[in-house]
Length: 82
Image (cartoon, rainbow, N blue to C red; front, side, top):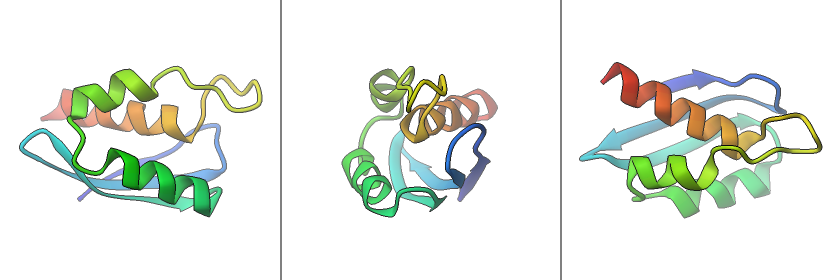
């Protein structure tokens, strides 16, 4: 399980697993529960790099980031360390 502490968004943490370059078991702590469950289900089984491309750069209310963008950041950080 990989854990990432978010920055600049309502959720506080994102936990996930990566197996064979596929995203598994995404869980957001805090934030908009329904929306984040939706994002988690949509990326389940998705290729790591495809998810990064689709999610990076999404902004929430002019914050310059969002929960999906933070997930992309977490995935990039995971990829860089592994």
